[in-house]
Length: 86
Ligand SMILES: [Zn+2]
Image (cartoon, rainbow, N blue to C red):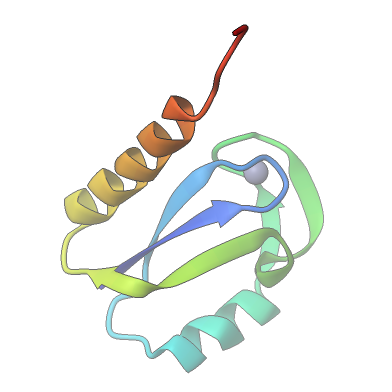
């Protein structure tokens, strides 16, 4: 299964391929894995993944393409909220 999420630091939208892991297993993984370099914003962090990633636990998607489409729709919604001038 695939979950969508967002980097708390740069706002980059990501997809998590969690395979058959339960939410609890995913949480445990994020708490013990180094964040490293953000694949979206390319910043490097010393903390663990759970400090920098916000995960949308619902809905879960059966395919990576469905998860990416969800992220794209969210991004589009954000873009439509940007107003300049009157
Ligand atoms: Zn980032």
